[in-house]
Image (cartoon, rainbow, N blue to C red; front, side):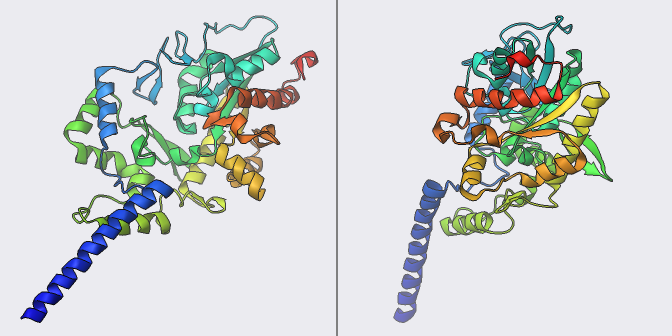
Length: 393
């Protein structure tokens, strides 16, 4: 009996040691790899705070949009950002009719199109206007967007302001957003706690799934009936379907550590199914939808009488990878754009030889945006021969 008791004590001590070691392991992987045990079917405290702000209407620059998920508010202002009366990032108003001798371009995309983290005067759109006074470059970019939302924003607003060319901004990480319907499923620490529409590819055609959180009542339900609301939001969301969910054993540090490492290091990682070690994963739903979105967007622009041009914005990780390995994360997409005959400009060469910390502060710095404009202007001249030669550098 005494021997059994000793064995039980020993087993208990070993179990306690396992749990303490696992707790330390959770701390280490969080600190050094930024891997946090974070089930996808849970609203984090910061998510709840953000939703409560939405319900109070406490949003200075962006607001809910029933169709797009969110959009810039008319006359919205916050810190460095200022919008005009139609919710376009611009310090002044524009008329649908263009002045004689001017050339209008419209830009749609995410935060790299919007030019986050710099003032209105330091966006690459403004830099283009400064380099060529005959250009009017309208900035319809919105932080956090995918090409899906940008395409719908073009349909909703863009054709009111006819342009010679529509610039379709694409940052390499956007590919994740095209299989996502609730931003926190994809970016767990996001400040954008909102729903969004997405497109699905069925029989070679794109079908839009509407924004599942179109109004404040839907957000109230998200707080009052969280489990059912998250399950509904996750039905067509890649990250909800492939990231781990809560379990009854999550109280145990060893279980949490095992589940976390199995996910982060295993083949089921939701992100690695889309962007793997060698870049975009061939045959993934995300790549297929992205390619078809860009094709549909470009076709719509051509149908409206303008020239489409896809701008591929590399992020900091893309530039670091290219300099180290000579390969692009998004090479498969570039190849697909070429195969489909979609005109595009890869902006990677714009930063050749430039110090990383001078170009990036997560987004492009004012200097980085100026490099984009300098590199892009001759490319525009090739496509718009009516632009005057004298303004080219």
